[in-house]
Amino acid sequence: MADLPRTISVREVGPRDGLQNEDPVPTQAKIELIDRLSGTGVRRIEAVSFVRPEAIPQMADADEVWRGIARAAGVRYSALVPNLRGAARALDSGVIEIEAVVSASDTHNRKNVNRSTAESLDDIAQVIALAHDRGATCQVIVSTAWGCPYEGDVPVERVVGTAGRALADGADTVSFGDTTGMATPGRVTRLVGEFRSANPDAALNLHFHNTRGTGLANVLAALELGVADFDASVGGLGGCPYAPGATGNIATEELVHMVEDMGVGTGIDLAALIEAAADAERIIGRQLPSQVLRAGPRSRTIAV
Image (tube, rainbow, N blue to C red; front, side, top):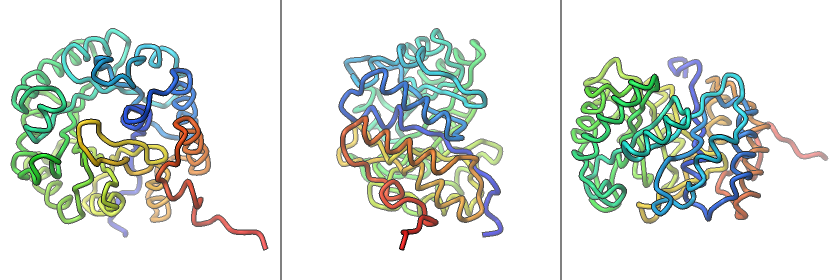
């Protein structure tokens, strides 16, 4: 384990990627959850998505949530945008970190935004330019990076090529999304290796779902390659509205619990994070999949 990163950066995506897959949550409850997460030591939070209300009604209150959150010192807040119009809305609202998403799979991309991967990349080039003109950064998320629920396996070359096009157009960073939990450690090793060979200086974030129970194993495979930037969702909230069968993201508290015990720092207070996960569970009114939320950290003991 000596070769693992000493620290990693964790982006909490529950308020956006998690809640967009639940029944609509009251605006004030979203704000309170984000504020609670801001006090856990998490340094990056994906707060909202500026998308058409009829497309994702759970994000219809993005403007109100963005205005309502109490911004904690040292915490960076970002927003997902689906296209140039969404980017303009986000930037007009004062967002300085945006994320644009494109599927490596044409079929999934058409289900998501009704256009081909190539057409989305053309639009994202304009999103990147607009963000930079307004003094903001833009990360490009390549979803279905390890497979598509409609097409099956997506060739590694296509995924790397999609990311390479985004970087050539000026993307500040790239993220690979395992949209339906099709990744396994060996596939993570291959994709990260091919991407790093083609783009040795590019910053890389990874976004794993735990649909088939391999989420944390995939994190370990990536850590062994030196990846030090991961998304996770409080309580394991999440899924994908355009990917049947997709279940939640890896749980933030499970990620923190595992890597901290391996000597990899996160700067996150695990106890506070577990309390935030319990709040998220109360907000949505159903049991979340996080096992650390159920059992607590491994250091918890039972009184005798």
